[in-house]
Image (cartoon, rainbow, N blue to C red; front, side, top):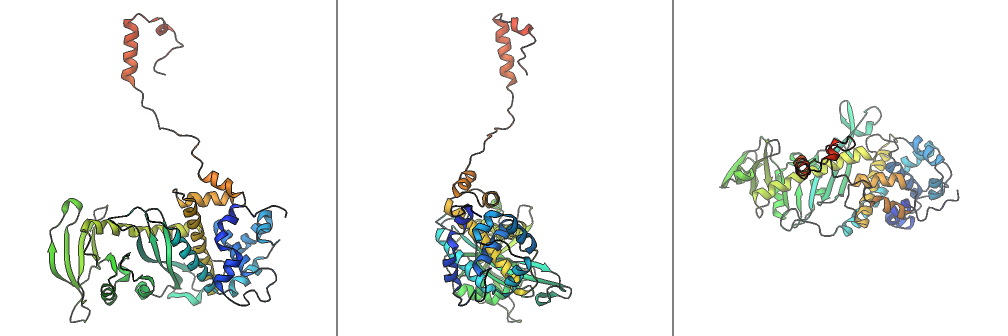
Length: 416
């Protein structure tokens, strides 16, 4: 094990999270008390590598360590069994890795410079949603969701710019907890931000609270909502705005009526299906609000990316500690990649960078950078359209000028 990994791509990826920084973040005394081999930091390193390489079991992670000399050098460990990894995963508190995640979020926010605005001066949006990881009830009884199913729900707020989607706030709970119960945690009480969320977060009392704190939000209206129209603007059919109203929501008899008015906009999606948008933004045009709401799909794309390219669907352990720890480290791995992307000012897809990382993890960092920014070797302009008219005119010109000998020669064919 004599290979130098101090200048490797992996070392650069984890530069913002070295052991000294990690211990300062978690701030837990006796974290590795009685631990001889697998410290909490080495455990984190191995699980980040497992996420990057999409290992789906602790056995595969242990085998990868055993067969990869550069990895052994990097973590300063020869081999370790899957049972040792499992025991360490079950005893480490998930809150440790939640702290690391929050630290990386702050670091990434600092690097997020002012970007190209979506509309006017709005250059970032806060999108709120959740995703459920379904599990077997018999193996995960602590995560009871329904009578025959278990699950964990990741409640998330992401910062969306035109270039990057970055997790900003996260809550991990058993899936039985409804989306709207986490609104207080996920909403940033910032009048400059615009929040996007779906109908699962419908709560009139919460809407009133947001209005009173001047929090701007855009969401969808439920079909059975009780509406009182106060006034109405002229529709803008050319921009697919068929209604723009100021309304009160709720019912006085049921004591659900809101004390603050909201704006209701009827528009359509790309498939021409009606969308009823509800918002507290009265300073933007109806078209601008409709355009902004369409960015809500960014968080769906984020969840899809996480489930396809990181390991948060199949778990290494059965305990709550094991499951939560794995999800937090998946989020940490994503943030590390975003930080590297921002550091390098790379404008390509994140997946492209991840694949290059996988291939060059233990290669020198400069090799990784060159590969990431290497221009395509073949710059095809597509199938060229042949100019038959010019070709015909050339033949006519040659014939008129009596240059015809080459036309009788089979080695010359102007068409092919």
